[in-house]
Image (cartoon, rainbow, N blue to C red; front, side):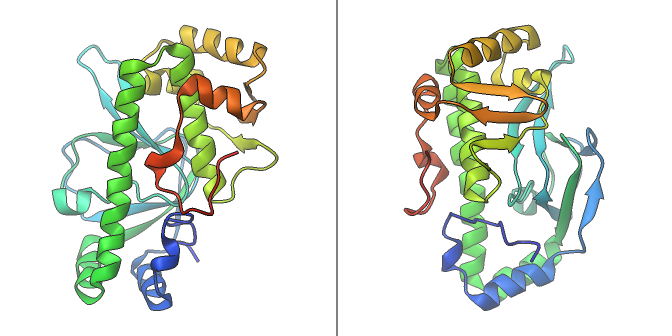
Length: 241
């Protein structure tokens, strides 16, 4: 099913079989989006929400000086713009980072779904609250951590999110972000990110190469990141390393 990874590891078991089928039924057929493409622009009126089946996408904002700030990175199983359903337009841009597969949930069908299944509506609301929790953590990361901590935190968060949906193998996961992307997520320059990744690698914590992240020492990396996974609201059985 397209939505198998929706809230996987996060209260998915609370959905009944009919709720799962109903959510699946409102989805369009999957489509492939090319890498590095802006798919929604700030101010656009949105009439459907995007579910990320595979790949990585991001939300970003551009400063007057032309510099981009990533304000979130979306991973498989996420609704990329479910908040656009009540807001009706977006205050940021959305883009693919690598090639992605997505499916769309038209807002009129979401309205019917939530009227018929109020509990499923609350679960969808919960998924937007997860976004808010991650935004708060990103604010903390940018405001209180040094460069090593910011980059380490980003890598720990991504590892935890992908591990919850079965996309980590032997401590490694696919990573389509460039050093420039990582810089734009962490409020750094690409040169600073390059230097920071080298420090973390030489310290034996993590290695990022060839679009793959290899965790070498989770405990030390998480300590450097001041990372605690509680804000991701995983089920009790989901454990970080």
